Length: 219
Image 1 (cartoon, rainbow, N blue to C red):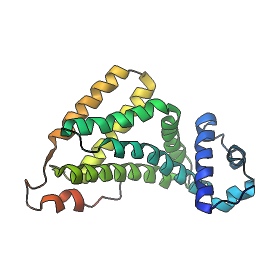
Image 2: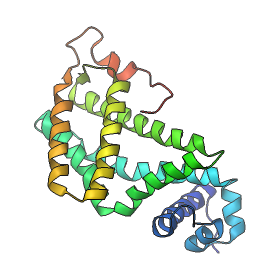
Image 3: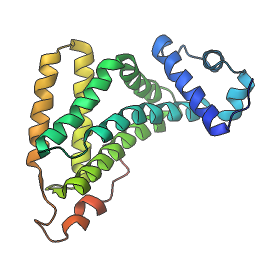
């Protein structure tokens, strides 16, 4: 087996875990099956991850990174704010449609962590990460388009997280593409209505958008 930097090996095992868990479920996926999926020995797995908690946290971070990458690219400034925001939501939704199993896995991970003693912090970390992700995207949008929200960033990030979390589960269950598109249009209009020029209030671009702290709670 070729030598590989430990960070790259961790990424390899994390992606293998995502594939195995998406296929077999979280509870049925073992360290041995993940190692087999990655094509490495079990000792390599234990060298890279000290515990199953560490692996699951890496899985949660990786799945989030998968879709934030495409959304970040999609919200580069377009002719109008609405087009820019809508493109970001569409990029997220396209990712859900392309990888439904991966997004179903996120809900399974939450339930698994909440029901297993000693794993509860993973569910909290999962939703804190979602909040941090939206705050980061709002920051990018504000910097690129010289805008800031009329409400604290932490509040808007929490709202967007709750909205997309519920919308995604609803869509995975019902499979109603038209209804989902309508929801995306509605939340886009809401976000646009909550943004204003960065110099409209004291503090300007260095005001609430870039400085508002995130609480260490569920978003």
